[in-house]
Length: 358
Image (cartoon, rainbow, N blue to C red):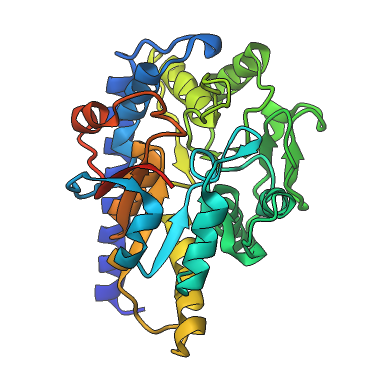
């Protein structure tokens, strides 16, 4: 390799390291100021405050104009394709949202591809797709992409290196565990917290305080790289309550470590981070190519693809960061029963469109 290229790579590498370290330091400073409530006391304002404290980890993005509209289905002419969030757009809890079937049918009738990009790490995207099939929603298997997929894709690239024998400990209580020669599983393998070289947090269903205590002790006493396969702080529930997702529990761990002056190396997968959007946009490129007869690598206008979601810090921020048009849906998910615009303004995250429903 020529010396100039080696120097350039060295400069780029250390610039990336500097950006990551600055982000970690900024989060450490901000997270100390946040009063994170107990899991059963989490409210919308708490969720926004936690997300804002984690903001230095997130990509930069442009501001939209927050144009109002009643229904997403009335905006289809604005877009060549849609990328939908799962929770808060397709379903809330275990029930599908009214209007999703009509939206999918209308998009199909106009040859507009619809993908699903969900922050779900507990189970494979195959399981999510099967849920949609049970509801008879016309969504193809390859059109469902999860934050777990982004981690597995990145992990697969690393494991192609035969010298990479990293033992990855995957954890969560009610999860579909990863498989592989160097995978350790929480609750199955002895000395889990001691034996793993790195960790991946897959899901937080049935995650309890005793689990959290062990997690925090492990990361504080022997810090190792931590991968988060679902960055969500919360997900909307049918009863109006807020679940606690890996982003919530990770924020608590970062705060506990920061209070002791300890930096932790956290890598995030899923919305709003680029790796998940890269997978979704690559799939969208294929779908648009199939419809038009163009080559799969033919460029397309990302601003004609809508990222539709209910969360400012995952769906809207992430979509805007990669150049998509963003649509915030307010009637069903995170902002149900609330005026979303004051939260948009206070967080400095304005979508291109705000719609009430599908």
